[in-house]
Length: 222
Ligand code: HEC
Image (cartoon, rainbow, N blue to C red; front, top):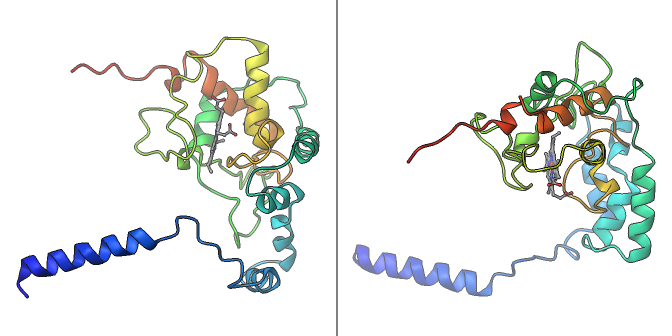
């Protein structure tokens, strides 16, 4: 066969492969839940095996079992449970310092499996970050961003400057599942306590403040 023939064969094989590929493979009968949990538990060798317990979560169990389509009743139970985890800063201010928020949003430290002291959000020597750019475009000056979540550039510019918007944003960042039962966004405050209420308030300011780079994207000319 010459080069062209190889190419045709490769294309035909690729097409045959895609024609039969199931877009949502069902692994159900390949490994039992018990086997999976045992294998997952074995992989937590660095720290206290109790760390594994943080993966057990009533809300996620319902979301997994229903493929993220909980019934109306299950949705109500999830929203109520998750709402209860939300804690506000002691001084009652849900709107902090955008400059500090910028650091939290960019920082990808902490909250990792096997990372010693994963739940040390209150320890000023090892504060956790939020790594929001893994999923969102936010400050357009930041070099890269994921797109699992909606772009948040101009977040404050596009929304009314009201207390309700500040509270909505605080609650969303603190616990995304308090408004959207099977949201793919991590719950930064409760129930796992990855960042502090004060850090959440700083992130809120970063998203909403008129002086934040989020709301001042560079002007581009064509
Ligand atoms: C793993 C991906 C992921 C990460 C990391 C993530 N988000 Fe999200 N975010 C999402 C998804 C998906 C949505 C849309 C679904 C929803 O609203 O729950 C969302 C929605 C939002 C919304 C609501 C937008 C609107 O218009 O109402 C805000 C605000 C937000 N995220 C802020 C943040 C901030 C701030 C961080 C970091 C502290 C962050 N997100 C980290 C995935 C993520």
